Image (cartoon, rainbow, N blue to C red; front, side, top):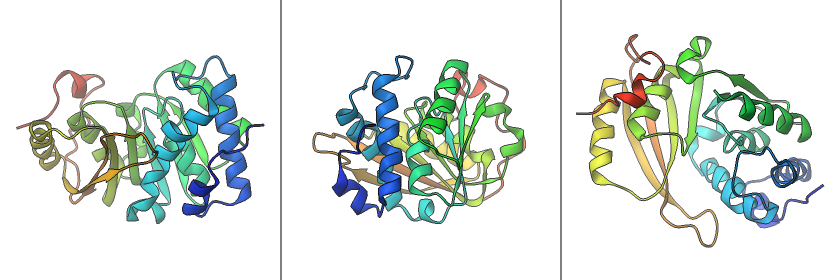
Length: 232
């Protein structure tokens, strides 16, 4: 079993030995499972690129108090699985539409003994039971930001928050996102620059609050958000 290689990171986020062991197990599976959906396979590198990057969200207020979290387009399981380990009192839904990735997520939950994560193998637009249920929605490298907002808005309770991992900032795209947010009952709270590991560049967490009920017409039918993103 791979030992989690960054004790300083674990200490910074208040993780105990058991949680470090679970993160080590995730790294072990990422490295050893030929079906792991990532190009970053080495445990040492994945500890930075996947785990450290995921845990940056713990510095945000909404995550620490969240009881229900949804990770959209979960893929390899980051940030969702790392957050489930760090926040054992929260229930984390891993929403993923591709069967092979769902299978990997199931293996990862079992291998790392993560009992507070649930794999939902369906499209985000099809998760009717999740509407208005979540305190926080997270998304990492999922889609254009207006698309992520349309996915996330209906799933959040009023007062809940979306945390969206982004790279370099783009003022034009941010203006389009602001228009989309207004249509969905969302508003931008903050954009936080992060440096989760030594050679990280242009990492930002965009945090949106749900301030009003999302109109019932959202999300649109499967595929429409990507095909015709909301904007000005």
